[in-house]
Amino acid sequence: MEKGVARWILDIVKTVVIAVLISMVSVLVFALIVKSVDVGDDVIGYVNLGIKMLSVVIGCLIGFRRGSGYGWLKGLLSGILYVVTSFLVFSAISGEFTLSDVSWPDLVTGAVAGLLSGVLTVNLKKSAKTLDIYLLFML
Image (tube, rainbow, N blue to C red):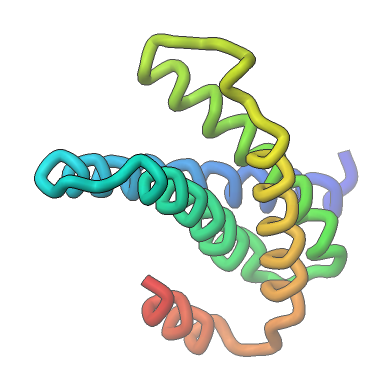
């Protein structure tokens, strides 16, 4: 396998793994909040959407640090793979696997969040130290 292709695959896999881990922690924290505070169903949907988008953004920011080209494509692929992977992981955790839970809006949201994050990350011309400070303020 060509070195560039291997780097691409590694960047995408790293981004997806980071995004899924961030989602898992965020969903756990949000579940604890929901358990202690009365939150409406509509709020839960919006927060879940925000968790997904933020997970993809942070995953891309960390996974694509080297800033090689085609960030839009790497981000798009990462966003789609994140949605599929997180669906599989959360289905395995819940013990319920139904394809009706996969939704086109989730795929589109993941793809758009990944695309925009990939473009942003690859075009950031900051040093790694500045990027770390930027990530710290995002959290």
